[in-house]
Length: 296
Image 1: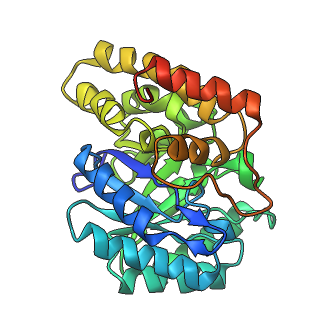
Image 2 (image 1 turned 90 degrees about the horizontal axis):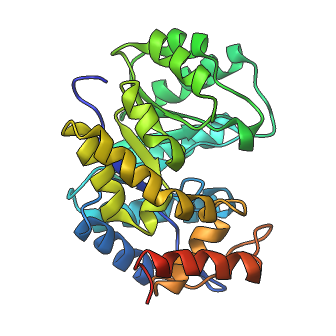
């Protein structure tokens, strides 16, 4: 963990409320306010969970711009600015920086499947174009490419490269990465079911999907860990596990969009190729939410 992280604890990878007519900014504003009231430590806007890949470039910029203005410095705002096209990622990153984000989350290029040398070149180019810290986002299950620990080592200490969102699911690789980055990069869990394990390896927090639905409890998990109550944090990790599993029973963000709609925050509307979740899976997820007291 570095001495000055972008945030410590939980950043919600926020859903983007949409309708057939476009982004629902009124709903987005209400959702941002509720997350802050619930004690969330930061927000990630227009990332995977925010359906950044199906927003137009102009929508993408405007969603980040609106969110920065709505948050108004109450907590850090992190713009999701990655792309499989580095020029587009640089354009989005520059725009987000100009609009006042505190950091940018940059996923590895999807479909292109860059080499490790390509990843190093890409991250350096984006960092050079940025005026704010960059969080590298590793999620090989979605992109087809893994950031190797040696690549983290090569990028550690590079100006504006500040942190990792690690969602490769391979704890052995995460341990190896933690060993090579030391205190040069912060590491955030990108998997809600691995928060406490990654905190135990010196992690700084989590960029979370489940905190859309249960922000206060997710924050409490990290707070307990940082306060030295590891057993208490582990208890919450286990308590949240059935909900986490339900939120990933179909590809993210399909289930979390349905969950937020059931809570009254947005319509259950997704852009193709995403579609609403199956009735059986949705019913099972909503029952878990009722059992946890999230829904009546």
